[in-house]
Figure 1 (cartoon, rainbow, N blue to C red):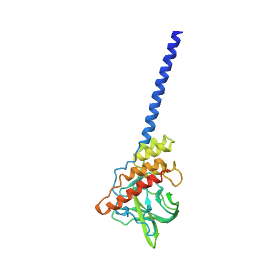
Figure 2: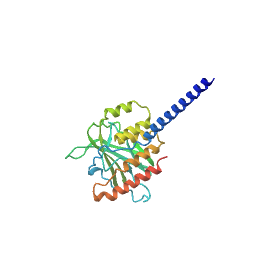
Figure 3: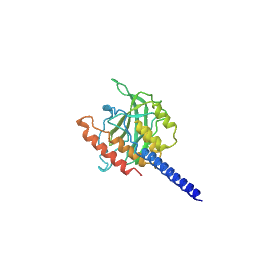
Figure 4: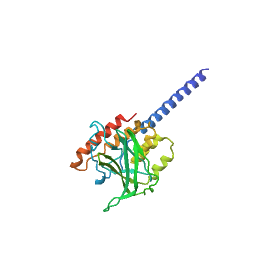
Length: 252
């Protein structure tokens, strides 16, 4: 009887230890996912084509409203692994936007990819899928995507540069090994693939919203939006403030 009680006590102790170890492992696993931040690849400065214009909303719009804002790096180049990336932004009111994509070639004028693509968007977070009639982008090339709107006969543009990059084999293996969208978000974010990370994060959010993970990503990339010279300091500072506001008000 005594030996049996000792055995039961021993088993209970082992089970408690196993439970503690498993709990700690799960805690560390989910903590590591939650703490994964977006990190730009080399933070390559963008060219003059993607300079932020600061507040360039319509004169008839309230100054309290946030103007058309691209949810992508503008002062540095963003990366994507997709040959047909999705473009994301924010508007305070319904807008008719015109999308243009250009290939950027050194010492040459931007080369248009396809024709203008017009899209009606509603207030909040919006996404514009890569137009079906456009050819695939090419790995290794740099592109400029531009959204335009017309207000009081004045055309207002916002642009950002991106590079289509091949996914490193180690990252590709990790992505293939998981079915968790949250984990994929973090893998893309840690690898510096902005467009892919945000696109995955928005699939976890409510329509027209960023969700918690998307809001966290916006705060992350905004930290790296730094003025390249004195003449754009005010515009970039204003843009970062808009991004921070969007991350808060569009989280849920």
